[in-house]
Length: 182
Image (tube, rainbow, N blue to C red):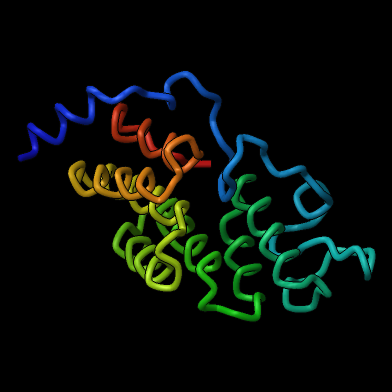
């Protein structure tokens, strides 16, 4: 079975090998625009436009979308602990975006089992979460579970994401063994 899956995989055209890298947490290749959160704020704080200063995430006046964008920016900058603190400040801890990023952070910190649990929770909330599928697939690649990773790639494509960052990043990981670590 594994040989047939791998043969099918390598016969597919690879968009990922000819396209630029995509930014974490998005469906495009545009990295988050650095803000004062990553250029001026100390670890553990985010920029609050309303207060015009860096504050702890729970003290900020950012709404969940603002907190999500801050978490994305921090994750892209490699500030995973602060990204996790920002996620904790979001009002809905069962939001599939929160669960997806918690999985991404766990995977980047080497806890593949916890990452997979977060991704599965995100997918239980939103089966169409292509980012969770891609990140989970990349974790599966890191564990050598290529058939399972490929199943996630097939599902991403089935859900209309064939040309999206999630599909391209997972395709690249399956083909090269190199996963997204930004």
